Image 1 (cartoon, rainbow, N blue to C red):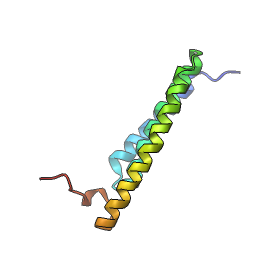
Image 2: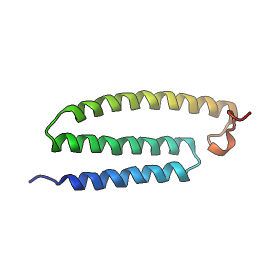
Image 3: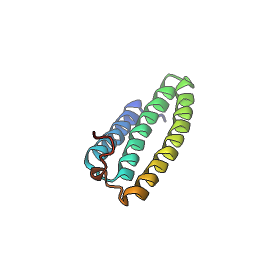
Image 4: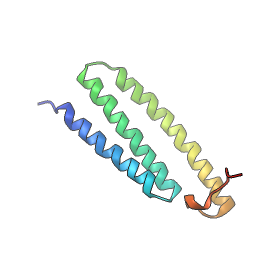
Length: 101
């Protein structure tokens, strides 16, 4: 028994929407980073679903590289968050105006 691709697309849409809501609502930098990761995982679900649907491994290979880049992104992001926390003693996004003139 195969699972229809529409189920994967609905799951991906719900996960992506959860990530968007998390980015727009949250004020904590770590929660925003986790929401961005949710959106990335939603796109990975789409790639794997269409890769299986079309019987092509290209989507799964792309997901492998996307996960590798995401791991590096998280490492750099957490390093920046730690540096900001050490300088400001907070990780609330509203308290950072470092790029304002």
